[in-house]
Length: 104
Image (cartoon, rainbow, N blue to C red; front, side, top):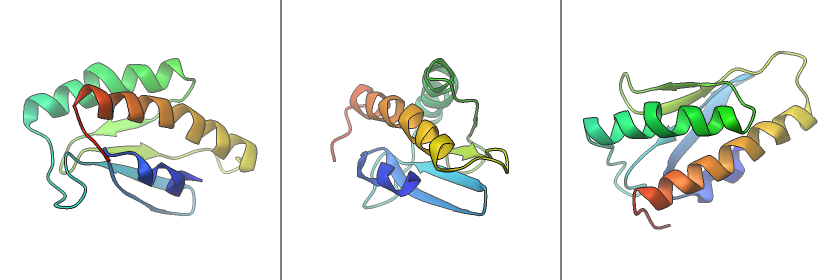
């Protein structure tokens, strides 16, 4: 389900194994250009963390290296919970893309 987020301009990659996944965030998907330090601060701490939490999802936004959102749902999660995760992430990531002026 997380692969369906790849159409959002800010999503550079979705990767993981088992129940531990990461959504990599990029300024330019083709070149994998990342964000400036100021943009990263706004994106991860000032915007996405709060927006995703308002949508009911607790996750870890991290910029030690490439900016990513780490996801580690409980091992009892199934399709319904994965859909909730996707549904929480999509609007926040789409709004972040618009706010940064990114186009798909």
